[in-house]
Length: 331
Ligand code: BTN
Image (cartoon, rainbow, N blue to C red):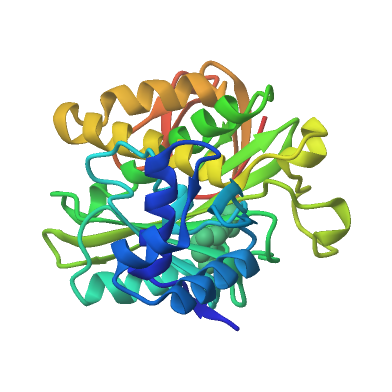
C-alpha cells in the first residue's frame, strides 16, 4: 500500500466532526451516518479504516464512537489541524511512500500547483541530497518535506530562499527541543557539530524570472544510530540521538510550516535583509575565523556575512573580501 493519502474525503470529514466536538466526546453512529449521508455500515467501515491508520477510536456500547488518540502521521488532517497560515501549508499533499518529495512537488508545480503547496512523505525511495547524493529516508521516523514557492524574483536571487528555509528549520528545532541548532553555510543544520537536517532547493526559471522554486527540507527527527547509512562523508545525527527524547513529527511539521509561512511573509514585505541577519546570528559564523577549501585553493579569514546571491563573505588577513560561492567551510 504505497502512494498518496486522499485529500479531503470521508476520513477527513469524520475527523473534522470528532475534533469539532471537543476532546473525548462520543458521537453516535446514527449521527455520523446522517451528517455524512452514508449508511451505518459504511460509517463502521470508515471507522475501521481510520483505526487501521492508527487512530484510537473506541466504540461505546449503545452510545457511539469516541476518538481517544491520533497517530503521528504526516497527513493533512493532522499537520493541517489548527495551522493558521496565509500561504505555506494552505494545501498539504501526503504520501505513505514516494520517490522524492522534491520530484513530486516539481511535477505538481509544473502542473500549476499554487504557491504554498507542501508535499510530505512518510518514506522516500529515492531521497535526493545535494550533489547527486542519496538522502536516507526510512519510514515513520523523519520529516521529508518539499514546498512550492513562486517568488517574484530573478533566478540569481533564488539562493536567498535557502537562507530562509535554514532559518525556519533552526527555529523549529529550537521550539521542539532544548538543543541549539547551528546553520552551516550553505545549507546544513548541525547540532553538536553533527548534521541533523539538509536543504535541497530546485527551480524552474526563465532568464529574467523564476517560475517556481521547490524548497526541499529533510530533518532527522527520530532516526536511530543504526538507521544511518555507513560511510557518510559528514557525521550525521537526529534530534532523538542528541536529546534522548522523541519528537512528534506532526508537531514538528506544524511548527516548521508556521515558521516558513511567517518568514516568507516577512521576505515578501521586507526583502531578505532581516532573514540574512537571523541567518548570521544562528550560524554563529559572524566574525569567526574559517578555512574554506575549494578545488585547489584555500582561503582563511573571518566571516563578515552573506550576500543576496547566496555567497558567504570572508575577509582575509590582508583585509580583502572574498565571495565564496562553493566549497567546504571549516570552522
Ligand atoms: C543535503 O543536505 O544534501 C540535502 C538533503 C535534502 C533532503 C530533502 S528530504 C525532502 C526533499 N526530498 C528529497 O528528495 N530531498 C529533500
